[in-house]
Length: 366
Image (cartoon, rainbow, N blue to C red; front, side, top):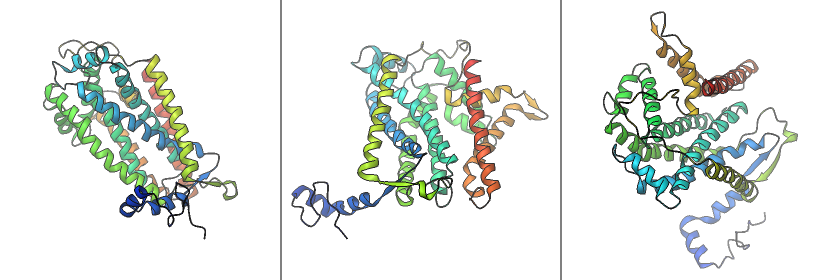
């Protein structure tokens, strides 16, 4: 068998680069390189969806870098939070650009995570042996939405305050632990300094720690299990390319394209800042949550105050929870052994996806 060459074009035995030799003795870079050379990625008509995970990772890197820069100037205090964001937007060189990068990248990351989740779902990539990978992916979606929810309050403007009130009111309706969870998040019975401090801590410490832990396991499982090929694709129609350098270079090109989209949005639609929050002022007319909560918000609006003896919001949240539970457990009831269950899973996913799109558009226009 031919010996795999190293990045400098030499064989591992003949490499005389002192720095490479020093690192290889400690990190076993030769084995890592040889593993990368052996790993392959399937090529077929649905291969475009394989890039969604990489795009998500790229937006996450943008979030980390811009988030650290924003933390230098942001002050998580009721009397200073809004002023510190205003200072970033108007007085710090390129501050508006960094903040807009952070806000737009957050929204694009959540959008791509949804794409990644549903493309994985419809390609049946959750089946054995990838059940744990799917469950962790669901957990990552919850975490990125948690980032969006906690980060939305931090500018402390009027819209973010009342949108957070709506979110916490909905949280309080969650069965069993809803009231306790909402109280813990608020730090009391009303939104106050405790709420802002807790949201800031959750946003910059707790959620990142959880995210890095789950993401590390998620990426490790993908490396161990490889990339799945949909069962609907014939073996004769599938080709393979090396993960490195072929797929990696394509992935980097997709990153550049996604970054261009991000820069265009930031340049022509910079993220704004509303008036400073006033807890005693009336709620702004037509107040709504961010787009990724709109479907749930609109669905709950349609439910009457009571359905028999059950409170309407409690009933609606229970339905949403059951839908999420069914999606999370899909690897265990659609194992591929039954064509009927496979079709049922596909139809169920289509109904959920179309409902989310319809309710989101409805909520945005209403």
